[in-house]
Image (cartoon, rainbow, N blue to C red; front, top):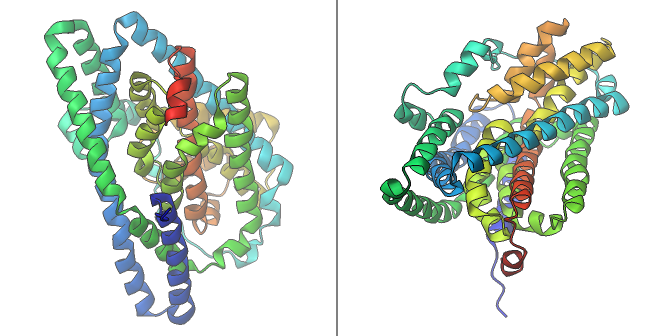
Length: 416
């Protein structure tokens, strides 16, 4: 039988080649104009890939969510599934926030950091962009669906899609042609996704080469303990906690991970959960999740259920306090958790959302704002893990809601 490399294998090859290229440039041209020229040019590969993905997101979210709601049926069904979905999201959020605090208090990564060699700036993180109630409401309700789609404002698209989907559902037979049309749109977008994914290995190569060329693989050494602890926490959350929940609910977790492994690799290598969205939808349907549930839960999950990013917020804030020798009381940590329980739901579409939220949180607990720069050097590395965990969290959410609704097809799993 002739060996045929899979897309996942090509993506891993892209990661390795990108790392080798980046380290070569860093070692031989560090500090020279050649290094910056290489980074600017190689980053074009990842920029092109991400732009190709982003051009798919808005029509795919709109079409799949509207079809999902329309197929859910009446208001009672939509409300029931919606309440179950939001209930699960908040349950997962609380676990992620608590786990982040437990990790940082048990392993104390901030205590091992040597601040004497610290010399970075935080100018590229604007704390003034942090979420406010007014900003959240404005971000939540679009002035124009076309503007929201043009800017890839996922949360705004989700809100409009909810209204549109419910209206289509209420109209029934009159709006059936719209449902069929949007089903066709979704299928076309999935086909386009397949074409775009051929470019993924090059996009991954560009992203990895750019990071390593600027910082070298040595970036991992000074922050090794921080990265190790955080990745342990991500793995424990994704495979320990979510895996145990799936086991209790009799959801085949290992098979679920096998199906979403490719979206996880894409999210990890590009440090973008968004880039994995189209493939995640496809993988979950092949796994056996109900198409209408996936169409409803997954778009909402990308706005309200970014588990890896949420865990990072408590972890990073307490880490900064430790690095500067500041003790946060139990009461302060609980307050922090409650604040993040709300603010973490209002950052969909905000660039570098986790850092923005942390930047806004630091002054509230009298923590040095420049402490955010402690994280900038390795934020790309940490974001890779956060993004992959976000994919796992939303995949499990879709499987859980499908199970609760009696629409998880075990027969389909074996075929997929």
